[in-house]
Image (cartoon, rainbow, N blue to C red; front, top):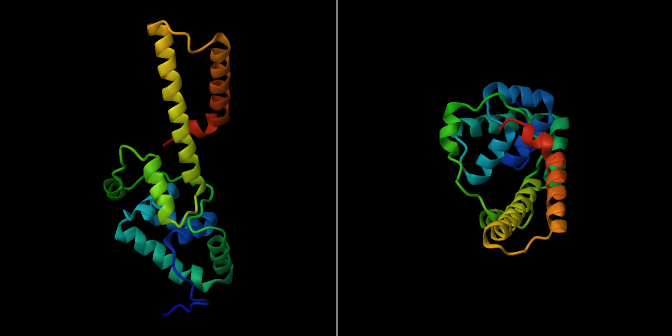
Length: 188
């Protein structure tokens, strides 16, 4: 039995993933077959590391469901019009399938240069995740700088950090910890 498409949409794996993730029914159908979080799938898709089976499941859902129902077509077009690589609320996947773990091979570093290269490949559009990771890189640089100053003061006898500076550092770290507490509690 051939399924009739209501509209011929231009296929985009990332947009399709976002439509699936944003819809409870599609998400449930998808996660019955694929036991990997949408965040990991987005990363694999962007890096060209997704296996063919998972690619096939996404493409099938695009062809057989999204393109055949007006509500899904509208969601797809809405996401496509707002961003090329949309980021919707992260979902929780119970476990990562062993076959996917082999493909992931996460790099030891994924720094500013790599993120900027990815942004350039996307035509200059920055995703919320990329923006956040650039800011995390800034935070890492702040940490390295302050840690070096602290060591020099404690070991080298310099006075780079005043008592007021130390109070500010403590206060800022406490604010950051409180603000990110829920994010940091989530399982990886």
